[in-house]
Length: 304
Image 1 (cartoon, rainbow, N blue to C red):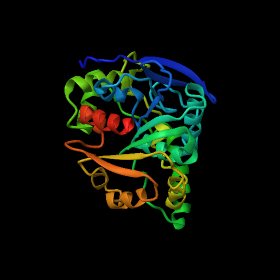
Image 2: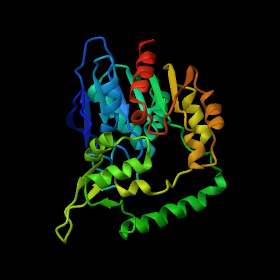
Image 3: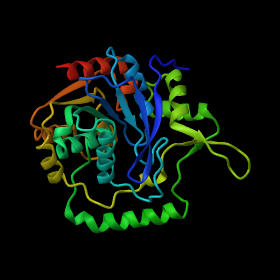
C-alpha cells in the first residue's frame, strides 16, 4: 500500500443544500493564498494525494469532492449541471477564502470548471492551472431536439434502475479496475486510491460488494448543447496567468470525440495570458502517472 507523506484531514461543510466533503492539507498562512484542487469526472479529491506528497512547499490546500462524487451527496438530483459546479465552488471559496484570490488547479472536468469560474469571477483567481480540462466538442443547434430526447430517455433508464455503476467483490477488484483504465498506475497506488474511490454496500443477500463513489446520474448525456461561442466569451474574461498542462499521450485523439488538440489550442487563444506545457510519459491521469514532474511544473508556475 502506498504510504502518504502528507496526510489529509476531512471536513464536511454545508454548501447550498448539500453537505460537502472537503479534503485539506496544511494550514492557512498569512499572506499565502490557498491552493484549491478540483478533481475530474468519476474521480475524488483524494486523487491529488500523490501530487501533494511530491510538492516541495508546505501550504494550505483544499480539495472538494464534487456533488455526487466521493463523500459529497447528490442531494437527490437525477441530473447534474455545470452551473451548479460553478456555484458550489463560489460558495466554497466564500467559506474558506472570503475576499481572497486563490490559486486554482483543476483536472479534466475540474479543469474546465476552473477555466469557466476564472472567467466568471476573475477577481477570485490569482493563478490558474488547467490539467487536461479540454471542454467538449462543438455542437450545432440542429442537435438540440435529439439531445433533449436522449436526456429524457436516459432519465427513464436511470429511474428504472438500468443505469448503475459496476460493483466489485473487494478492494483488489477496484484497484484492478483503476489499473485497467490507467496501465501506468502501479499496484501500491491503485490499492491506496481504491479505498477512497469506492465503499462497501450491503446487499439484500448479505454480501458487501464495493461500489464506485459516484452517482450514476452523472452518466446521463447533458440535455443542453455545448456552446463554444459562450465558452470563448468566458475565456476572454480570464485575468489570471494561466497554465494549460497536457499529457504526452494525446487524450483527445484516444477518446475519438471528433475534437482535436489543435482545436483546443485554438480555443486557448481566447485566454489573454495562457501558456501550454507537456508532461512526458503520461496519460490523462497525469497526476497519477508523473506526480513529481507535475508538482515541479505547477509549483514553479505558481511561484512566478
